[in-house]
Amino acid sequence: MGQTLLCRPDKSVWPTLPGIKLAHLQYKSVARWAFGILFVLAGINHFVQPDFYVKIMPPYLPWHRALVAVSGAAEVVLGVLLLIPRWTMLAAWALIALLVAVFPANVHMAWNAELYPTIPPPVLWARLPLQGLLIALAYWFTREK
Image (cartoon, rainbow, N blue to C red; front, side):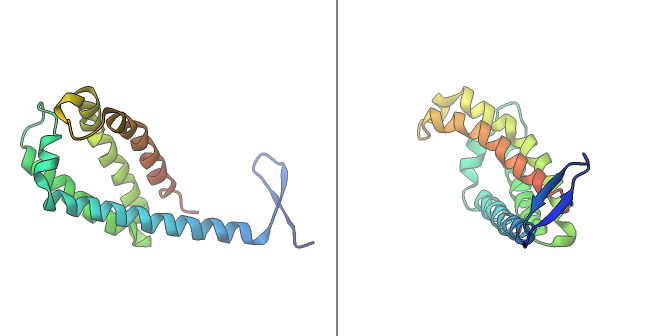
C-alpha cells in the first residue's frame, strides 16, 4: 500500500516509495546551491587574499598572480553558473576540469609541507582525497536527474 514497483534496466523489480525521488531532488538542489556558493566564496577569496594563493603555486608554473586571478574568476563564474539550471551541467564539467587542474598545487603543498608551516601536514594530505570528493560531487551535477 502506497508502494510502487520500479522496473530497472537489469529487469529486476525494486519497491520504491513515491516521495523518495522528490527527496533526492531536494537534497541535490540544496547540495548544488551549497557547492555553488562554496566556489563563489572561494573565488572571491582569491581576490581578497591573493598572496596566500600565490604562495601555494608550484614554482614550475609561470605568472602566479595572473593564474590566481584567472582561477579565482573561474571559480566565481562557475559557481554562479552551477546555480542556473540551464548551465548546471556545463558548469559542473568545467568545475571538474578546474579541480583536476589545481590538483598538482595540492600535491605540491603536501610534498613540501615545510614551505607551509602554518598548515599542519595532515591537513595538507587530507586535501588530496577531499579533491576527489569535490570532483565526485561535481560529477553528480553533470547528471540530469
